Amino acid sequence: MQREDLLYTSHYCEENVWKFCESVRGFLAGQHSPNRLNECWAVFVSNANKTVPIWCQKASAVTTSSLAERIGFKLQGSPTNTGAEKVVFDLDTNLLFPCAFDEYISKSFGSDEKLQKMYHRWFRVVQAEQFLADFASDRSHMKKMKKDGSFEWSAPPPPYAPIKTKKCENNIEKFWSMDETSNSFGTVLSLMDFSKI
Image 1 (tube, rainbow, N blue to C red):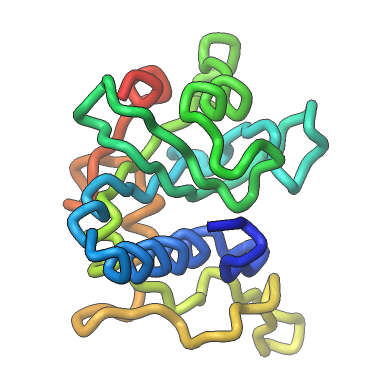
Image 2 (spheres, rainbow, N blue to C red; image 1 turned 180 degrees about the horizontal axis):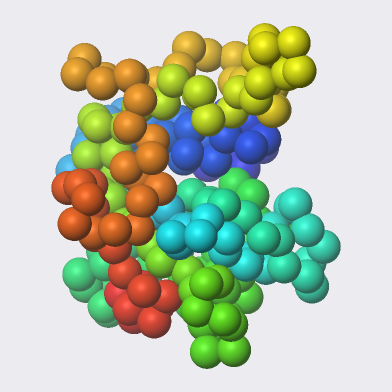
């Protein structure tokens, strides 16, 4: 899959990752390999302050960092099999697409050692199948109130209807949360632990 062939809406990274995982599921089903979706993971990066420095993002120059509330990307390869090749599909990076996992971590995140604790990055790693089944966003986080009390989009929304499940219309904040005890969506890891998977 080429980056330019994928559905993408700027500022809607979680939905971009969901649509990408949906495309991968369809591709694997067509290849009669639906079980390979178990090798795909959605990854969310944030922290309690919602301020995470990330390098090599489209929102910044290649050599400078972008300070984001959160980002999302797709990881392919088994986090439980350290010998397996892992690659990252990040629709917002200036790096290769896909990018080798070690290179992506090194160039996008570096280390937390020189950062103030408030900027340390945390990673919520969710199996793609669970993400596709459970993620929902009504996009309310992308609306801002104008002076007259009406709302406007902080960025134009995607052309498709909001993603929801049969049980939920909005749980995006649970995927952003880096409090592992707050919900059952995936696993929360420090940058150091995530870089070792």
